[in-house]
Amino acid sequence: MTLRRVDLGAVDDFADGQARRVEVGGRGLVVARRGADFHVLRDICPHQGARLSDGQVTGTALECPPGAEIVLGRDGEILSCPWHGWEFDVCSGRSLVEPDRVRVRVYETAVEDGRLLVACD
Ligand code: FES
Image 1 (spheres, rainbow, N blue to C red):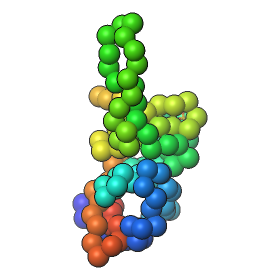
Image 2 (image 1 turned 180 degrees about the vertical axis):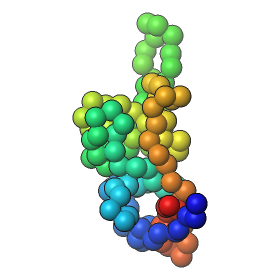
Image 3 (image 1 turned 60 degrees about the vertical axis):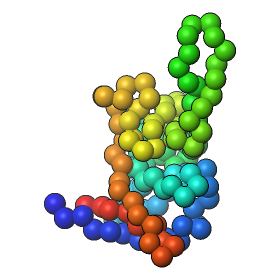
Image 4 (image 1 turned 30 degrees about the vertical axis):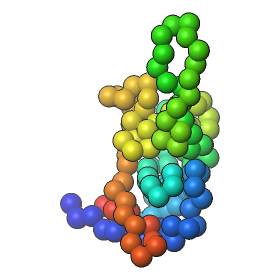
């Protein structure tokens, strides 16, 4: 299968710490930016089909022993679904709760000359 590189726009058009929907060939994708890092995932939640681009780029509660104070971390590494709050790792697309069973497709990205490129089939 040959991948084509698609120009999604100027990197400055993607706000840091936010999710934004783009369409490539009729396919909805979500771009999540964290500083100089860009992540592109399919814009459909595998639970009930919400647009992940309507969710938030956020962090999550870190693992801790029962009864311990909840500590938040991984800021900017998680995309949370707007409908029921399922959380996905922006790098792998894997669900935090069931990473081996539930995932969102991720796409390879590159930045060249101030433009965000994504590899699509
Ligand atoms: S549709 Fe995304 S968590 Fe339910």
